[in-house]
Image (cartoon, rainbow, N blue to C red; front, side, top):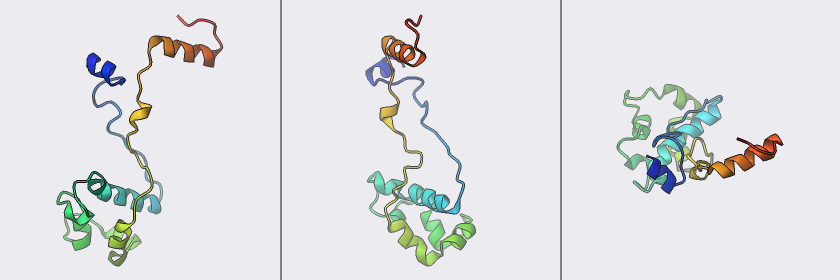
Length: 124
């Protein structure tokens, strides 16, 4: 693990910060999060359209097959609008992982930052 972290300038165990969650506080954000999840296979280049990814709940919403309880979502966004809504590009970032924010500092870099912020002349 040390070798991997040094090579890729990472810190912590392999899956550190990989799995995250954040609260959904309003209906607009809920719909945005659902679209984000359904569009992930498209953005990853696995499929060209949401409905082509067989492991997604997207088709369960469209078919209302009972596998997914879609009633609350479809009350907010009727089925006639659901597909059109999913064709729009999701622009919210949600909880995307940003590799650039996970950088390992050397001891000297960390000392300089601590000294600058704290105003101390030396950090030992």
